[in-house]
Image (cartoon, rainbow, N blue to C red):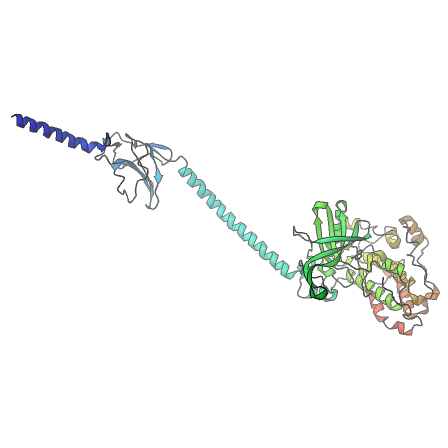
Amino acid sequence: MALLRFSAFWCGTILCLSILSDNLEATPGLLKQSQLCKFCDVRPTNCTGVGRCEAGCEISSTCAHTSEVCVTIWRKKDDNVTMDTICHNPALRLHGLLLDDYNNTKCEMKERKGMGYKFFICSCTYEECNEHIYFSPFSDLLEQVVSVILVSLVPLLVLAVLVVTSFYIYRVYRQRHARPLRKRGQPLHYHDEHANMMDDEGSDSSSTHANNLNHNTELLPIELDAQVGKGRFAEVYRAKLKQGTVVVGGVGGVTGTEQAFETVAVKIFQDEEYASWKNEKDIFSDADLRHENVLHFLTAEERKVHKQYWLITAYHPRGSLQEHLIHHVVSWRDLWTLGGSLARGIAHLHSDRTPCGRYKVPIVHRDIKSSNVLVKGDLTCVLCDFGLGLRLDNSLSVDELANSGQVGTARYMAPEVLESRINLENIESFKQTDVYSMALVLWEITSRCSAIGEVKEYEPPFGKVREHPCVESMKDSVLRDRGRPEIPNTWINHPGIQTVCASIDECWDHDPEARLTAHCVAERFNEMEHLDKLSNHSDEIQYSEP
Ligand code: ADE
């Protein structure tokens, strides 16, 4: 009996222990208890998947094994939302997933993708820890925001990419079709005739406004040398346009490097003369202006740091026609070269056709005088200083026309300009004022030509170089007295001079309509080429280098 009681005691103890051992896990000094979890069926729920939700049933139960943790699964298939609370051993997969958050004390939902429907799951290890479940307050909202952003931004981005690409293609197209701008380091070996050919080769009207403004933030590497001129609005400098370094051979075969450069002219306008810079730049930017008797324009720059505006052009070391005539007596041949090229330059400016016959905008200079004409090495002229130039195109505003009454230099102003009675209705009237001024310049050249006989010191028309007659005194001479510079009879012994003087006389006629055109004067010069053969005074005075 005692043995039976002893056996019963041990059996009871062993049974108790075995039950206990199911609920308690032996740890050093501690046994783990089975987890108490919410244990509801899969059931419909109001939980929207945002914020905090409840398990939604009253049933709590200890898990069958100590290894199990509390798990909640939230699903949304179409519009059907369900919640499921279970016990599960995290060492095993559940719906193909391993639980990685089972040590949490709160059940915090995480979305698992790839189920074919919305699937959120959380696991935790604490008493009834899956009673309350927590969704990220922003998860859905964030997703909605992201999708709205994507939906609205993607088309915008695509549009932006399309616009940028089209703009880029357009720029490349324009660059290919416009007159090529000289690149850095590319030498300035331009030849004006060639330039004209390039103009006419396959260029369309879009190239007529080829804008040579240097938009690069990188300005041309230019070093100013010396001031060579000063006008009403700007100063002109001779400058070095650096071209990089070149290897040079030295004495005894020793080589070194040298800075290569080209000499250019830089016309510098201060801030307050912006309008003048802009006008001249706009005139120069017309590719159709290019001509061997028009100053070759390279580029325009805004030198913001010094609040200056630059025009960079070819440099002509002989300087202005006025300087040239002050220091040199010219031969008939020189007169013919200087006068003919001057007339051709103005004729090109005034013309509504390029040499190829394509339409071009006629331009008037409005300040033709011997100091606005430069002399090239071959004694041909180039027109410069287009600060008062006017494009006679359809875009000419009423304001521009109204303000175009009296501009220029009083000494060279045509009678109708002096009395501000220019016919604004007819664009030819502007050209006729240029022709009047050209006549005075032709007279200046003739007055210094050895073919006229005795040649006096240079004097500008209507007075001395240093005097600057005002409009009122010019009105007295030109309008009241109908005065013009003198053409003595002694001049016209030379047949060429005779023809030139006849043209001068027709060009400074009081009646603008009676004047010759620049084109006609240029043709007359062409016809005069051989007149020096008949002269006693031909080329006996040699041209001397400055
Ligand atoms: N004076 C004004 N412009 C000039 C130029 N381009 N070359 C030489 N002298 C000038």
